[in-house]
Image (cartoon, rainbow, N blue to C red):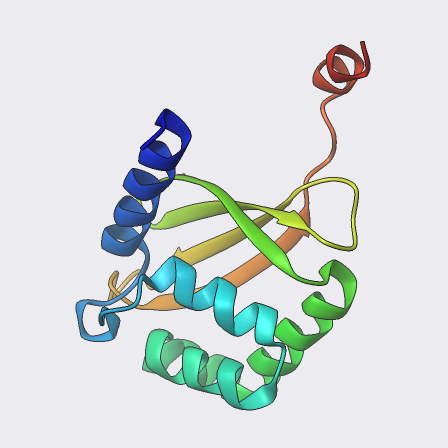
Length: 140
């Protein structure tokens, strides 16, 4: 096992612990489960993910269908995503992903519910602005 594989495995384990409720943690890694559901880009897969991982309070604010529609819209913009790394603090986990449709990476931000931290209150997905210094270094 190389260092990148070890780091990815450790990051996925951390995300599993931080990002989702104990009740939703099954044999599948929750970060991997999100990436798989997102990449399938079908309503049943995304509906199941939202129902199993979002807090009841979050689903009262925005319905399952509204959240699934937003994820389907994000998939149209990003295409398939590939997990790269996880970071975050407190109630927020940031999953950096590579997009099949965009040149730059994207961040999937999982925000846990303030009253039920094991459950998701929202997911935000946005492209990452390229770092001009890193971009210039990579071009050399």
